[in-house]
Length: 553
Figure 1 (cartoon, rainbow, N blue to C red):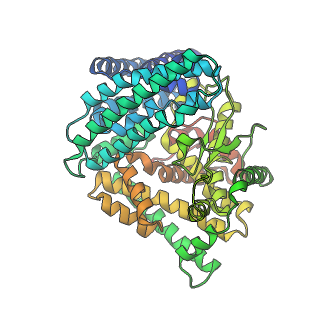
Figure 2: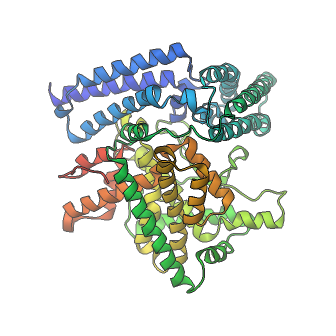
Figure 3: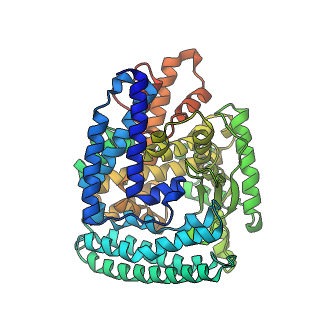
């Protein structure tokens, strides 16, 4: 079969299989910008799951009929992306089985905030779509309740109860303001009734969840075999877990050594924690947090251009605004438009402000987390050249195949953003800023601990208490935030991907630079890396390297 014919067949098959995916997971279609899927929740009933499982098997068979060797390297990578996309969903269905053991994985389907915050249609229409989702929530939760095992880890149950109860509060409190500008009383009435119906269903579901957490803290570990399967299907990584653990441990030890050296260069004889407290005192005033963040972004953006780090393919800017009330559990977050969004293409950088009713001490503690050095590190990760610049390359770069926009890998998206924190300080931007380097290393240590605790809790014998101590001892964290980080690992074993992705990018960069020799440039590497969307990083090696080698790490 000729290359052009195989390429056309791959494109048609990709479009069909991705449509099948959105038909089953309409929330994914809606969030990426296909608004014909608005107002729908997935049907996760046993009959529909069986139908979808058969659909995945057939999709892989149909894909196998195409010869990837008849494609050029970029299209061959798209083929492999589609293959992984199907295999990952199949692995989740057949092996991880989150419907039975991980209720946290499904709470996101019920988040209707996108209908409120993105102005892609008249507010009345968006509220109707949100109300439709809310009206379906009771049946959706009943399906989850019937599917869940009676024996769940108490840690996973505790976090799930918190999540679903928080969603109920979001419906009752935060969404109450969403309809204030709507003139049609029927739309408001339908929306308000749906909010309360859904919130009551969430309350009932959370209460039933509590009875499943009486069997002790164990049971959350997925085990070595499933862990390897998660990395193989999700990140395209086939490597022994012992090697993955050894590489992570070496990077942790390197960062621990480096942070002590940097601390001594800043203030000889003082502890790292004391220096961090000093850094925390240098922060914007509450009323200046948003405007100073905007100014900081312009400075970082200009540095990308001055130091020729990466192409910035658009004059678009993200809007720096206060975090909406329903998202204020986070210090800051990037909300880029969906990869296929055509109507509401604006992006938002949320920064969480001081609350009006806080005491002076509470305000100071909060703002210390937005000290100028940490705010720079967060802004590099979220905006320039992290998530937002990645989004700009997807939107304004070369025309990407649909599968490249859809089948993104956790390790690429978060690995890239985390990589940029370190990379920026290797350029002239970090010159003469040891305090900025120290805060970057602190962020790296948190991600190092996620990596090692994910492996330890899911493939070894590390308990939640062990993981909590690990964060405290290796990331300079107080007990409460350390425990929260450890708890996340019980239901999100993939949170090793921040560091894992960063390390795979660094290895790819090293190999690319060696091959390019004197022709190498950092900017060219970054532009080529981001020109393919967000694929599993091992898939990029045959595209970027003459000799891809045998390992991504």
